[in-house]
Image 1 (spheres, rainbow, N blue to C red):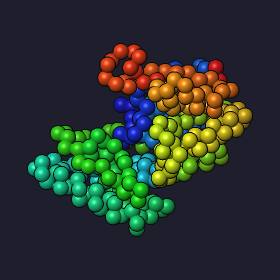
Image 2 (image 1 turned 180 degrees about the vertical axis):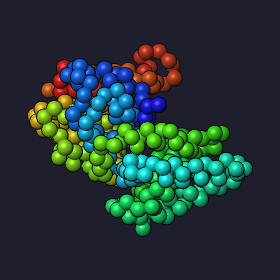
Image 3 (image 1 turned 135 degrees about the vertical axis):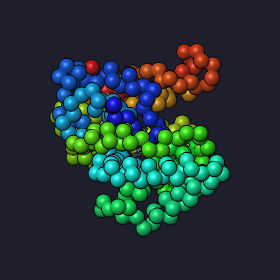
Image 4 (image 1 turned 120 degrees about the vertical axis):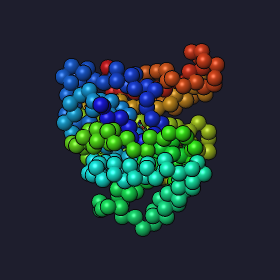
Length: 303
Ligand SMILES: C[S@@+](CC[C@H](N)C(=O)[O-])C[C@H]1O[C@@H](n2cnc3c(N)ncnc32)[C@H](O)[C@@H]1O
């Protein structure tokens, strides 16, 4: 079995994976080897797991600003077996309950998860990491729409999902993910810290949060995870600097032209690079024809 994302994550890249894969630099496709891979906005890691299953990657650096997500990656890397045990226990308790009590358990775990934030030691690995990661996975699998959304205080605030058979413990995949993470460094922080790991020949995939199309959210930042137009500009400067180092860079984002054909925001920021527009398997509205499909942009600094 191949490793796949262990969480459902907003902005997951499943819909354009094929388009991304077909844009992997030719040198890498020919040799089948990636000496160094860096992903500064890893999220659920759909693209990382895809290439990890197909290429030999010698060194990997995965970065994200979300500390809960990074905590779970690190736990899976370090101690998959205890995590699986915790998830199995949770799964067993959950499925024994009536529907009403299942919902009760969800809210109890959500309450504990949020209460622990203030006292949690995110810096030093200890047993609490296993419980917290198990709670995160449990909540992600049983909440509405399977997402991870936090309020400004960092509290998880998605309601119960009421799904029939959520797969709370996917033991096989957790083992595969743990193996896939063997030669990786997993780091919590802003994308700019990836600068330390990028050198000539490094393959970097950037998947920043989508650009908000409404004016207020394009300018305001409510939490650390928010990414406004200033951040998109900061990223474009970073992209150019890393390109000058001789790294292979691929970046994806939503295409603002879906909403406004005259919006040239990314075309201007990345005017010296290759900008491709690809169809994602999502609709702007439900009419199902080609014009209704959302376009995304993929930017590379190589042909
Ligand atoms: C579009 S998602 C990535 C989705 C991912 N490719 C996947 O397949 O699930 C963007 C990610 O960027 C992270 N993020 C937001 N601001 C960031 C920043 N300044 N530096 C690094 N990561 C950031 C978010 O926490 C989120 O996980």
